[in-house]
Amino acid sequence: MPLQDGIVGPIPDGADPEEYDKLRRRVLWTMPYGLYILGSRDGERRNGMAINFVTQMSFTPKLIGVGIEQDAFTHELVTAGRVFSVNLIAREDRAIIRKFSKPVDVDTEASTLNGFPFHDGLTGAPILDQAVAYVDCEVRDTLDAGEHTFFAGEVVDTGFQRDEDTEILRMEDTRLNYGG
Ligand SMILES: Cc1cc2nc3c(=O)[nH]c(=O)nc-3n(C[C@H](O)[C@H](O)[C@H](O)COP(=O)(O)O)c2cc1C
Image (cartoon, rainbow, N blue to C red; front, side, top):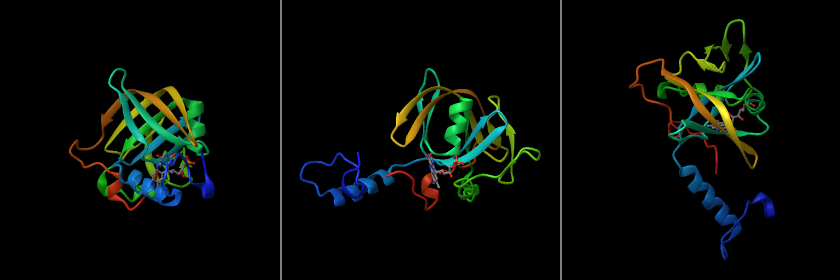
Protein backbone atom coordinates (compact mmCIF):
# COMPACT_ATOMS: atom_id res chain seq x y z
CA MET A 1 0.00 0.00 0.00
CA PRO A 2 1.37 3.46 -0.87
CA LEU A 3 2.19 5.54 2.23
CA GLN A 4 3.32 9.17 1.81
CA ASP A 5 4.87 10.28 -1.54
CA GLY A 6 4.09 6.98 -3.20
CA ILE A 7 6.26 5.01 -0.76
CA VAL A 8 4.96 1.46 -0.54
CA GLY A 9 4.70 -0.24 2.88
CA PRO A 10 5.26 -2.08 5.09
CA ILE A 11 8.19 -0.17 6.60
CA PRO A 12 10.03 -1.77 9.58
CA ASP A 13 9.46 -0.03 12.92
CA GLY A 14 11.90 2.83 13.47
CA ALA A 15 13.12 2.97 9.84
CA ASP A 16 13.02 6.25 7.94
CA PRO A 17 10.46 5.56 5.18
CA GLU A 18 12.34 7.46 2.47
CA GLU A 19 15.73 5.93 3.26
CA TYR A 20 14.25 2.47 3.61
CA ASP A 21 12.38 2.86 0.32
CA LYS A 22 15.65 3.67 -1.50
CA LEU A 23 17.52 0.84 0.21
CA ARG A 24 14.79 -1.68 -0.58
CA ARG A 25 14.84 -0.63 -4.24
CA ARG A 26 18.64 -1.04 -4.42
CA VAL A 27 18.44 -4.53 -2.91
CA LEU A 28 15.62 -5.58 -5.25
CA TRP A 29 17.55 -4.23 -8.27
CA THR A 30 20.50 -6.36 -7.19
CA MET A 31 18.52 -9.57 -7.64
CA PRO A 32 19.81 -11.36 -10.77
CA TYR A 33 17.41 -11.92 -13.69
CA GLY A 34 17.42 -13.12 -17.25
CA LEU A 35 16.03 -10.83 -19.93
CA TYR A 36 13.70 -12.23 -22.57
CA ILE A 37 11.19 -11.37 -25.28
CA LEU A 38 7.73 -12.63 -24.43
CA GLY A 39 5.61 -13.61 -27.44
CA SER A 40 1.82 -13.42 -27.12
CA ARG A 41 -1.11 -14.15 -29.39
CA ASP A 42 -4.88 -13.90 -29.48
CA GLY A 43 -6.48 -14.76 -32.81
CA GLU A 44 -4.61 -12.73 -35.42
CA ARG A 45 -3.21 -10.29 -32.85
CA ARG A 46 0.43 -10.94 -31.93
CA ASN A 47 2.94 -9.09 -29.79
CA GLY A 48 6.42 -9.25 -28.32
CA MET A 49 7.70 -7.48 -25.22
CA ALA A 50 10.85 -7.25 -23.11
CA ILE A 51 10.45 -9.08 -19.80
CA ASN A 52 12.62 -10.07 -16.86
CA PHE A 53 9.94 -11.30 -14.41
CA VAL A 54 10.31 -14.91 -15.63
CA THR A 55 10.99 -18.03 -13.56
CA GLN A 56 10.41 -21.77 -13.54
CA MET A 57 7.77 -22.55 -10.89
CA SER A 58 7.70 -26.37 -10.67
CA PHE A 59 9.25 -29.57 -12.02
CA THR A 60 6.00 -31.53 -12.25
CA PRO A 61 4.24 -30.11 -14.15
CA LYS A 62 6.79 -27.95 -15.98
CA LEU A 63 5.47 -24.52 -15.10
CA ILE A 64 7.00 -21.18 -16.10
CA GLY A 65 5.76 -18.03 -14.37
CA VAL A 66 5.75 -14.62 -16.05
CA GLY A 67 4.81 -11.29 -14.42
CA ILE A 68 3.04 -8.93 -16.82
CA GLU A 69 1.82 -5.37 -16.19
CA GLN A 70 -1.94 -5.20 -16.28
CA ASP A 71 -1.98 -2.21 -18.62
CA ALA A 72 0.37 -3.80 -21.19
CA PHE A 73 -1.04 -4.94 -24.53
CA THR A 74 0.68 -8.27 -23.85
CA HIS A 75 -1.51 -8.65 -20.76
CA GLU A 76 -4.61 -8.33 -22.90
CA LEU A 77 -3.33 -10.93 -25.38
CA VAL A 78 -2.17 -13.48 -22.77
CA THR A 79 -5.44 -13.09 -20.83
CA ALA A 80 -7.52 -13.70 -23.96
CA GLY A 81 -5.27 -16.15 -25.85
CA ARG A 82 -4.04 -18.15 -22.81
CA VAL A 83 -0.62 -18.78 -24.41
CA PHE A 84 2.84 -17.20 -24.37
CA SER A 85 6.34 -17.95 -25.64
CA VAL A 86 9.54 -17.08 -23.79
CA ASN A 87 12.28 -16.19 -26.30
CA LEU A 88 15.83 -16.64 -25.00
CA ILE A 89 18.01 -14.00 -26.64
CA ALA A 90 21.73 -14.19 -27.37
CA ARG A 91 23.91 -11.86 -25.30
CA GLU A 92 25.27 -10.36 -28.52
CA ASP A 93 21.70 -9.43 -29.59
CA ARG A 94 20.99 -7.27 -26.51
CA ALA A 95 20.15 -4.21 -28.65
CA ILE A 96 16.87 -5.96 -29.49
CA ILE A 97 15.52 -5.35 -25.96
CA ARG A 98 14.96 -1.61 -26.33
CA LYS A 99 12.94 -2.25 -29.47
CA PHE A 100 10.56 -4.46 -27.50
CA SER A 101 10.06 -2.16 -24.52
CA LYS A 102 7.64 0.06 -26.45
CA PRO A 103 4.69 -0.69 -28.75
CA VAL A 104 5.66 -3.18 -31.43
CA ASP A 105 5.06 -2.91 -35.16
CA VAL A 106 3.60 -6.24 -36.30
CA ASP A 107 3.70 -7.15 -40.01
CA THR A 108 1.62 -10.31 -40.39
CA GLU A 109 2.23 -10.56 -44.16
CA ALA A 110 5.99 -10.43 -43.78
CA SER A 111 5.90 -12.34 -40.44
CA THR A 112 7.96 -9.73 -38.63
CA LEU A 113 7.77 -8.04 -35.22
CA ASN A 114 9.55 -4.69 -35.42
CA GLY A 115 11.23 -6.03 -38.55
CA PHE A 116 12.50 -9.18 -36.79
CA PRO A 117 11.31 -12.36 -38.54
CA PHE A 118 9.15 -14.69 -36.46
CA HIS A 119 7.22 -17.91 -36.91
CA ASP A 120 4.30 -19.25 -34.92
CA GLY A 121 5.05 -21.82 -32.24
CA LEU A 122 2.94 -24.85 -31.37
CA THR A 123 0.62 -22.68 -29.27
CA GLY A 124 0.47 -20.05 -32.02
CA ALA A 125 2.52 -17.55 -29.99
CA PRO A 126 5.24 -15.88 -32.07
CA ILE A 127 8.82 -17.11 -31.76
CA LEU A 128 11.62 -14.90 -33.05
CA ASP A 129 13.73 -16.70 -35.66
CA GLN A 130 16.88 -15.32 -34.06
CA ALA A 131 16.05 -16.52 -30.51
CA VAL A 132 18.63 -19.01 -29.27
CA ALA A 133 15.87 -21.10 -27.71
CA TYR A 134 12.17 -20.82 -26.94
CA VAL A 135 9.75 -22.11 -24.32
CA ASP A 136 6.19 -22.26 -25.59
CA CYS A 137 3.51 -22.32 -22.86
CA GLU A 138 -0.21 -22.66 -22.25
CA VAL A 139 -1.59 -20.68 -19.30
CA ARG A 140 -2.79 -22.91 -16.45
CA ASP A 141 -3.26 -20.38 -13.65
CA THR A 142 -3.02 -16.69 -12.79
CA LEU A 143 -2.19 -14.69 -9.67
CA ASP A 144 -3.25 -11.10 -9.23
CA ALA A 145 0.00 -9.38 -8.18
CA GLY A 146 -0.50 -5.65 -7.58
CA GLU A 147 -0.18 -3.83 -10.91
CA HIS A 148 1.02 -7.10 -12.49
CA THR A 149 -0.56 -10.48 -13.11
CA PHE A 150 1.59 -13.56 -12.66
CA PHE A 151 0.68 -16.15 -15.30
CA ALA A 152 1.68 -19.78 -14.73
CA GLY A 153 2.21 -21.49 -18.09
CA GLU A 154 2.86 -25.16 -18.72
CA VAL A 155 5.65 -25.89 -21.19
CA VAL A 156 4.07 -27.59 -24.21
CA ASP A 157 7.01 -27.18 -26.60
CA THR A 158 10.60 -26.03 -26.41
CA GLY A 159 13.77 -26.18 -28.44
CA PHE A 160 17.05 -24.62 -29.50
CA GLN A 161 17.26 -22.71 -32.77
CA ARG A 162 20.96 -21.86 -32.48
CA ASP A 163 24.04 -23.44 -30.94
CA GLU A 164 23.23 -24.63 -27.41
CA ASP A 165 26.42 -22.98 -26.10
CA THR A 166 25.35 -19.49 -27.20
CA GLU A 167 25.43 -17.21 -24.16
CA ILE A 168 21.99 -16.06 -23.09
CA LEU A 169 21.11 -12.43 -22.28
CA ARG A 170 20.82 -11.42 -18.62
CA MET A 171 19.68 -8.21 -17.01
CA GLU A 172 23.24 -7.28 -16.00
CA ASP A 173 24.31 -7.23 -19.68
CA THR A 174 22.30 -4.01 -20.03
CA ARG A 175 22.04 -0.79 -18.04
CA LEU A 176 18.31 -1.27 -17.74
CA ASN A 177 16.36 -1.61 -14.49
CA TYR A 178 12.98 -3.14 -13.98
CA GLY A 179 11.65 -3.96 -10.52
CA GLY A 180 12.56 -2.48 -7.16
C1 LIG B 1 14.69 -4.31 -19.10
C2 LIG B 1 13.19 -4.34 -19.12
C3 LIG B 1 12.51 -5.31 -18.41
C4 LIG B 1 11.11 -5.34 -18.40
N1 LIG B 1 10.47 -6.31 -17.68
C5 LIG B 1 9.12 -6.35 -17.69
C6 LIG B 1 8.43 -7.35 -16.96
O1 LIG B 1 9.03 -8.23 -16.34
N2 LIG B 1 7.07 -7.33 -16.99
C7 LIG B 1 6.36 -6.37 -17.67
O2 LIG B 1 5.13 -6.39 -17.64
N3 LIG B 1 6.99 -5.40 -18.36
C8 LIG B 1 8.35 -5.37 -18.40
N4 LIG B 1 9.00 -4.40 -19.09
C9 LIG B 1 8.21 -3.33 -19.72
C10 LIG B 1 7.62 -3.74 -21.05
O3 LIG B 1 8.59 -4.29 -21.90
C11 LIG B 1 7.00 -2.48 -21.70
O4 LIG B 1 6.06 -1.91 -20.83
C12 LIG B 1 6.35 -2.78 -23.02
O5 LIG B 1 6.17 -1.56 -23.72
C13 LIG B 1 5.00 -3.45 -22.89
O6 LIG B 1 4.59 -3.73 -24.19
P1 LIG B 1 3.10 -3.98 -24.63
O7 LIG B 1 2.22 -2.91 -24.04
O8 LIG B 1 3.21 -3.89 -26.14
O9 LIG B 1 2.74 -5.36 -24.18
C14 LIG B 1 10.38 -4.37 -19.12
C15 LIG B 1 11.07 -3.39 -19.85
C16 LIG B 1 12.46 -3.37 -19.86
C17 LIG B 1 13.18 -2.31 -20.64
